[in-house]
Figure 1 (cartoon, one colour):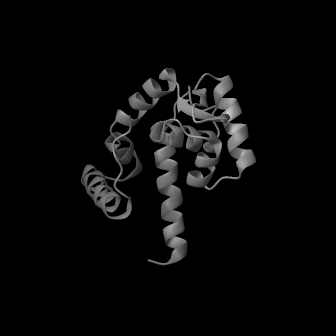
Figure 2 (cartoon, helix red, strand yellow; figure 1 turned 90 degrees about the horizontal axis):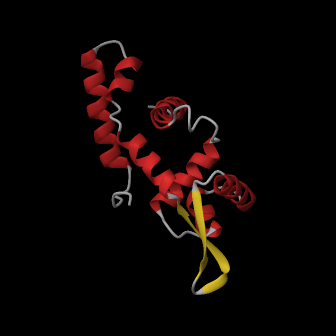
Length: 143
């Protein structure tokens, strides 16, 4: 596989993943906001700097996304007890419930719509599970 084909595959998987985790309620979130809330969901009590490092986004982008997500009630903020100058962010109860619901949905129906036959869908699902095992770092399950 060459680099261009790998990039095209990555783009297609990103499109499928976005379709999996978005619906009418989340359509108004930008991809950057989805990445930020996903990061905070996986790493509760995070400072903006921590999110910036993990996502690779510019600090200004993270700060803007955090402000929008807080306004929508999707992130809760608290002062860091060890350093009152820092704010620690956690996904709100509303966001955690919504995320758990979205992530719990099986991908198989979406994959079945993306390929020609049920046999292809089964094979794609098996290959994606194998790729995830090989390429993604082990992570504890989200809270």
